[in-house]
Length: 310
Image (cartoon, rainbow, N blue to C red; front, side, top):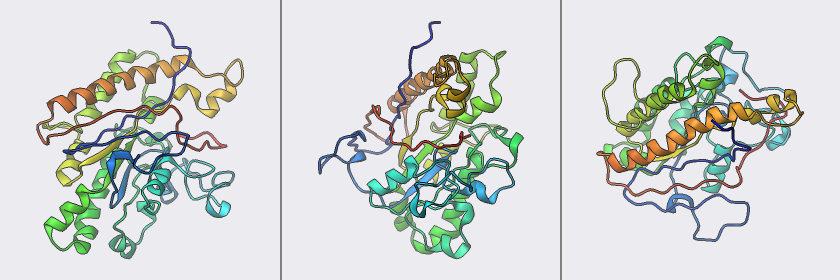
């Protein structure tokens, strides 16, 4: 298989609903009517890893933390918050774009704060992944199913107090955006050269996609299916970022500053399969009628950490 000379990072946008308008986040100014998904959202709920972690790992017994300099040097106040970046994350920029407050880290909230928040919460945890075992070598982290468990607790213990009737709660969840950005750490911790790349991608994709589709399961509670059953209707699904272009890889690669195209190829295999699987899901979903579009970011909205992220 020929290695690609480069990989352009991109995002897949999936919107599960009856109607959809999608435009890309691009470097130039957007027109007044160019709005992602065609409207406003009441809240942003975030499931993910270090790409979008807003500080949950600060409260966990793990070696994977970012609550020290130079993290946060360009964030509000110039102090580290637990974000694996010198500034804001893509989840922060999406919240700002829709006029929402930045989604706070779930683990840092008191019960009273949880009861008063209706604009979204961030459950993301650095070093974790789709597979429950991912990242546990470095300490405790919140795997995807654990994050969804916490979201269910948010509904049962907090949102039901704020939205007194079932229709009110259902409307809130249906008008919220659910961002999912997770999966790269499954490659970091569980993949090795003795594993066939296609087989690993298929296994990871199976765990990922069956979380969206309606099936039964024995050993993995399908997280996005659970999100759907809990009331989620609109999803922003993030492709995996190029592992071969991580800062620590760039620093040690020869020549210095070059990407590891072999690692990028592994990720591109999964991303290609994910794109096809999402298209298949769109065609075969029996839960809702839906229209959807995909767009690829020509310029990723991100901030790069001065310290390698997990």
